[in-house]
Length: 428
Image (cartoon, rainbow, N blue to C red; front, side):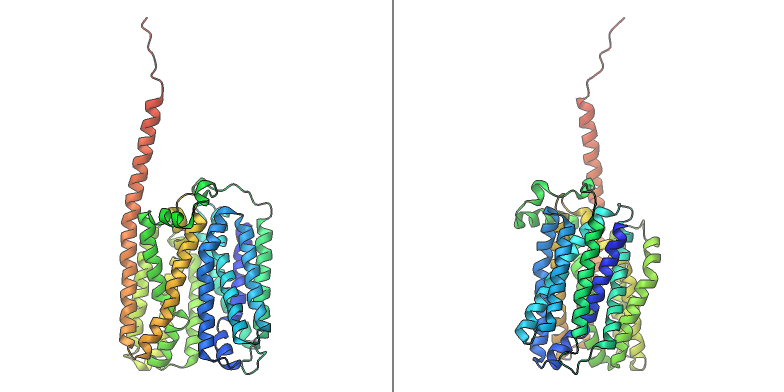
């Protein structure tokens, strides 16, 4: 029941985000007349807030009750986005977006820790998959509903979206609080937090995290996969579609809808089929899917008569990879985290992904702005292949880790036997 409430809370929270995300750039740049620089800076500050929040929230989730951390972060996000209703100047809008990004992202590591606490090891992939699906549905529904009410020709045309988003995050906070009532404080031994590890300094904690070879390769895979799709989802891919493929704007909306529908339809099936599959092997498949998607996008500019159809299809192909990526990455990262540093590790990885994702649109803008569409495509094919290679090396690192764990278990068993008293045989 707790995990169901957590999934519902995540879905409602992203419903609120969906009401704002598609419209905030045009609102700031055009509706309020603050210009494209202010609008771009708002997105940048949102990412900066996310970057600051992720490791900070992860550390707090290790040291304190993650329910309290998640609830506080959700309420902060509600205050940030709700406060945009009263933002009558660009600086006020920028502050609100920073607070919004901070609160939205800070809730992520805490919610992941709660999934790990409240779901058994056999159910974690499934819960993460349902959580991801719920978030995709929430964002899609939020964007659709807001589209019926948002009026970008008026200064108050996004009041509904801001209020709806604030209410969504507030309701999400209440649901998480309810889910946490009476929750046992004990956690699985492999996820135990607190103690000396949770009180380590930040640099020492990071040293412990990246001393684990498998985590280093997991970071490579996570960064490559983030750059290979998520960093371009909102800006790079739409810009490529409009400036290079010359498709209608409606195709971009249709592509996003297809992406969501494929995730919803396939997620449960994919989780069942891959339940016993090696996580690193699944991440290799995701990298291969990303590579295929960019190849299809490359073909699209050679066949303008079907460019729109191929662009929409590509988002469906990306979604197939997402159904494997989302349920696997967080449980894998948590399982590799040093004891007592699960939240810190998840927060650190979120921060790394956020940093590189923020760079993605800048790279896309520079390459496409200079007319280097082929360079844009080739770069992302290479990035996706790096993800495949990283996942391959991760699989080897995981195998070596399992061999070492078995050796240590055997040595410990031998040591215990050596300490057992030798039976004394008395001659008759």
